[in-house]
Amino acid sequence: MDILEAMQQRKSARAYLAKAVSRRDIEEILACASFAPSAINLQPWEFIITYGEEKDRLVRRLLKARSEKMVKCGPGTEKPLPEKISRRAAEAMAVMEPEISTLGLTFNQFIEEGSCSFYGAPVAIIVAIDKLFPVVRYLDIGLAVSYLLLAAQAKGLSTCPIGLITAYKEDIARVLNISEEKEILLGISLGYADESSPANAFRTRRVDLQEIVTWYE
Ligand SMILES: Cc1cc2nc3c(=O)[nH]c(=O)nc-3n(C[C@H](O)[C@H](O)[C@H](O)COP(=O)(O)O)c2cc1C
Image (cartoon, rainbow, N blue to C red; front, top):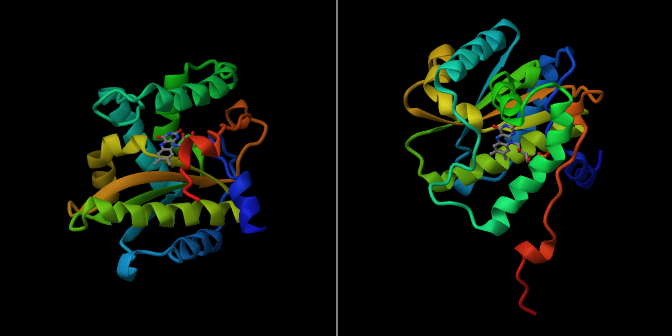
């Protein structure tokens, strides 16, 4: 698959087939992620991979943590977002909600429970960075995550980045024995998308370039 095609076709999948992903495919995808550029080639990213019983154990712990703390999904900002930006989220919700409601769940229930269970994907990836790095190095992690998502796409696999689980990072660290020196930044679900599910029946729109680009010519 052409790289541009992979970029255009990728979208987050929120329902997966019960089809295992081979260890070899996971390794190839991770190797592609590690081709990402990083400042002075520090490669600060770390990936913790779980599948099978280990992933189920992680999901059980996350769902328990969710039932106790009930963290809501949101942009993580302290100040309210400008209308122009919050409209983008509202538009995405408007595209998703009609499909989600056919599953008999509220939007928040679907996203919050679904995120904590990696949407039933066979593989759950935790992305971490050593706490000694400054926040600016999270940029490098973002690049590696992009590479990972696109490599998965090129292999006919689907993903969903899952930030919500970082609300339960102490639980994740305990289940997976992740050192206190590591910052857990993101989860990623990986698997074969269930294309017949309403949870995958929509695509979110992007704003026009003129809204995000300034030209001087
Ligand atoms: C850093 C990050 C965190 C995200 N966290 C979640 C999440 O917790 N749950 C979820 O369902 N989707 C999550 N997403 C997926 C976004 O909702 C999705 O990328 C966005 O709506 C655009 O849709 P698309 O990925 O289908 O193009 C996250 C995406 C990113 C990049």
